[in-house]
Amino acid sequence: MVIDIKDKIYQVPERLRGVLSRGYGVIVEGSDRVDVARRILGLIVGRRVWSVGDVVTRSLIDVGFLPDVAVIDRATLREQYIETGEIEDLYRVKGTILEVVNPRGHISSEAIHIIKDIAGRSGGRFLLIVRGEEDMLSLVIAGVAGYGDSLLYGVPGRGVSVIIIDRYIRSLALDLLKEILGEDFIRYFG
Image 1: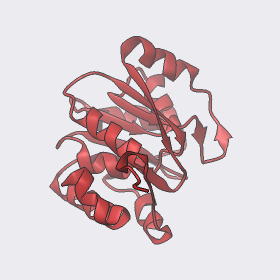
Image 2: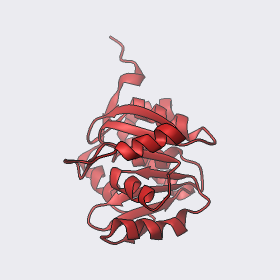
Image 3: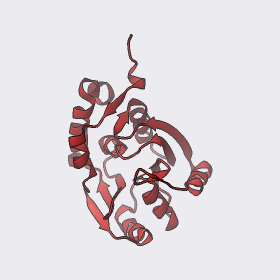
Image 4: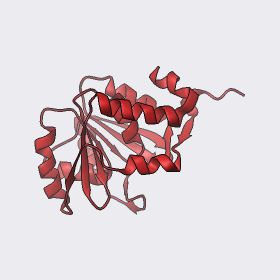
């Protein structure tokens, strides 16, 4: 039996999860999520914004900013359900909503394809709802987002990491993806 690449999932090794959970770029620290979101706005002005996480996305919306691409899983800290109805309503009116399956601690081929497709589009707003967990998808975004785009994700207990995609970040992301995807890497990023 041949497994089609579109149906594959790749487990992120435990030793790499620690590397991925560190904050890269500028970490905007604080416990008041709205204050943190306001401070982020000055760092991302004029850039395409990729927001990963329900709380980060919700906080940006609360200060009047709708990310170009938001990736959520309807949960926070892996356990608590978070109400995302308002987020989904905004994107239903102002953008496109997509859904993808991506198991916790993994990267799915479906998610890679969708993120690459979004990255290849020059405009529009997208909400990617993940059935599973969205955390590891920051790595895929860092590997395919345009140079100069900003990637935002929460750093538990600290604040929000704001990464501006440059050659170093892309290279780091692609090196980690090579390790995770193994021989299939070339089929996605060749």
